[in-house]
Length: 169
Image 1 (tube, helix red, strand yellow):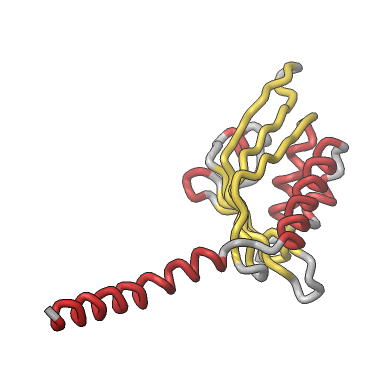
Image 2 (cartoon, rainbow, N blue to C red):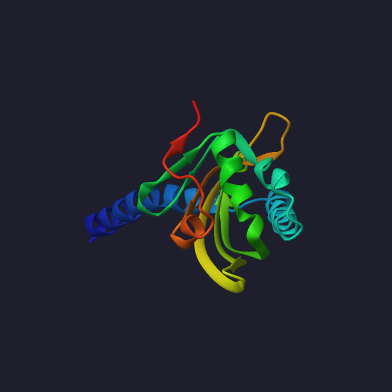
């Protein structure tokens, strides 16, 4: 009987040692409130910049080596290509970003969102929505910039006539 108790205790200890790091990792993805507030503020800046047609402010939210991945694996890489992409959104009159999840470690932050934008096409307003994944990277000055942006809605590329498969060298 004593052997069964000792073995049960050993198994329980072993399971605890195996499972505890997983819980620790899961908890480490919870962002501090100041980081969460920073990312939410940057999303509002993006919304306001698109609504006021100030695409240079949108482009400034990206790192110099950032990449946008569009449906089908199309890549828009580098500051110039990203600027071309966003300047094609000047036909959009409205934009909203609803953050559904934020996580990471403070240095790198992932964001899951739903983007909704209204653009003018053939004289009519058309509203689109897209699921978006972004990775924000903390810079040496402690500001966050977008390192990676991926969308699942082909309309986000086709309707803006954005250049795709274009990489800045």
